[in-house]
Structure formats: structure tokens, C-alpha cells
Image (cartoon, rainbow, N blue to C red; front, side):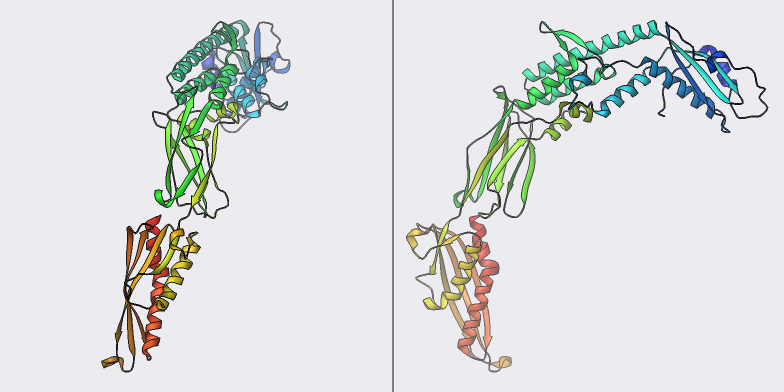
Length: 459
């Protein structure tokens, strides 16, 4: 049984101090009062009777008896659920959420005060406690608390409406949530007030206001489609604006996500003073399982930023909020690969290097054309070979070095990027074999480094 914070009557404090309700066998048995065996009935009072068996721990039997008397008293005071109460209005599929009922019960028990301790009796059979509470006084005190709670909830309702007009949605939600909680002791009663010329049931009205505002937050992207291309380095800052009834909605958390080809990238950001956030879309592969960008109001973050307790969040329930869904189009540029007019190698000697870069580009989703006019970019190989004949410690081995540069240019010939091949070596007994090995090593270097450097310059 849970602990109850109850105030004992001062008039019998001495009795409680000297009575331990222990299990001592020295207690002389006296006839039990009539209330121990026959529950009293009073039209003007609530009655609470509690009993506990003897306990060797001093004071433990008395404590248990007091708890049970208080719980018994609370059971007599329990209130009926009225048809327009919060619990009735939030009933789902014929079942009221258990946590709401238990919360109300515990809060009601904690607020029982002003009762009298009529008697405490102990005998060899145990300890017994008799509580009594005047019904009229209890009703008057509770009615005063309810009126105060209704007035406080009305203040929160008005404060929330004022904040909403000023565009402060999180603050409005916080006020309305506070209003709901201020009435928590009376959730299973009808709490009505006059508002804008109408009689409203406060908690359902506050919950509806929260739901209505969340449903009417609108999200509008700056455009209908995101296009990632070389001209914007495959990055796009997408602006999304949140509004409510045509006005800016600042401090609204927006969750957005898109698949970049490896994983689904997610983020949540808050709108600025003009209700805008900028989602940077980048690193998107042309080959991905989902081509769309999506965004929606992040209700969990919004409730957290507005300090909305979990029980109010449960009352508000699931909300279908505004969302954004638009495609991301990745336009991959095309390339034409060829030796430079000034290269020092024969055209055929470039084949392994061109093939290595071509494979890399295709793997990255780019297109490769043989026709210069069909390509967006040109990649030129300007290479030289240096040969060393056998000498000294190398004995009969020949050495060849491939050196030069690979240039990335626009279709018009503007240089965008140049990467160097710095003396890539091949060593063999045959001079031609050494040259071919140097070309092979240069192709491997392009695949692992220089080619990637060129691609990154476009991204």
C-alpha cells in the first residue's frame, strides 16, 4: 500500500505517542469498542477504519493501521465519473487509460485533510484506528480547491491564446498543458467555465486547442524538387518554412531525412524567427533505395522543448501533422577522356590509365562519352616517361618513370583541377616491361588517389 500524507488530530497526540500497538503479552485485554466489531454509520461523516496484526517492530502495527484507516476513508470519498469528465471524453475503444485513473486516485488520497482521529484501540489481537471526516467541511474545502483550480486553468488558457497570437507556439502549448495539470485532482469531474460567451469543459477544451494547433502547423518547402548537380557541387540548402494560420511559426522542431545511398540520414532542427530552417542535402548517390526527401514536425522534440509532461502528451495522443515529401534528383555529369595534344606518350600507351579512370567514374555513377561535344567535362592526360639504364647496384634492371599531370576542364576548356603523377616507377629486366609496369602502377595510383581527387573537386 502506498504512503499517504495525512494529518493526525492534535487532540489525541498523547494517546498516539504512548500507544505502540505492540505484540507484548503483558497487555491486559479489555473489551473492544463497538466500532472495532461493527462499522459505524454516519449520514454527516465519512468513516475510515484500519486494523493491523501485532508486530514486534515498535510502532509498525500502528503505522499500518493508520494507513489502512486513511485508505478506507479515501474509498468512502471516492467520486463518480461524470459523463462530460476528462476521463469520459478521453475514453478510447471503451477503455479509459489505467494510468489516468490511478493518478487521480492517488492525488485524491493525498489531499484528504481535516479528518478527526476518533479512537485508537489495541489488544492482543492487534491495533485498530478510527478516522472520521465531516462531509460538509470536506465538500466545502474541495469545492474551494476546485474553484481555485478552474480559475488557474482559465488563466493558463488565456495566456496560451495570447502567446499563440504572438507566434509563440511552444509557450502556448506549455500554458495549456499547465492548465490541464492544474485540474488534475478533478479530472473525473466536470470542470466548466465561461469562455468567449460559451460554457466550456476545460480539460477537453485545452486538449483540443493543443491538437488543433499541432494539426494546423504548415510546412512549405522553397521548391518542389531538389536537383543535385555538378554546378552546385551536389549540395543543396533546402529552405522549409513553418507557418500557423498564415503567420511565421518560430522555434518549431522539424525532422527531415533522406537516403544517401548508404544509410538514411536524419536530423532535427528548429525554425528561426521567421519560421525557416535550412536542410543541407549532400552526399547523395544516384543509386539509392529511396529517392525522396521528407520532413515533418517533430512532436517529441516540440513537447520536450515546451516542457509537456508525458501524461499530457498521452492525452493529446497521436497527431497527423503537416509533412513535406519531394524527390531528390541527382544529375551526374559526363566526361570525355583523352590524351592531351601535348602529351609525350603515344596514344595507345594511355590505355591502362584511361581505363582505370573510366572504371572509377562509372562506379561513381558518372557517364563517359567518346564524343567531346556530348560530354560536360574533359579529362586530359599530359604524361612523360623517363628511362634509366642498368647501372651500379641495380645490375641488369631497367627503370621507367611515368610523370606528368591529369587535368579536369569544362567543355569550354576552363581548367578546374589538375593532379600530378610524380615519377611512378616500374623496374624490370626488359626496358619495355619496365615501361609497361610503370604504366600499370600509374593506373593503380589513379584509381586509388588521383582519380578520387578529381571526382571530389566536382562533388
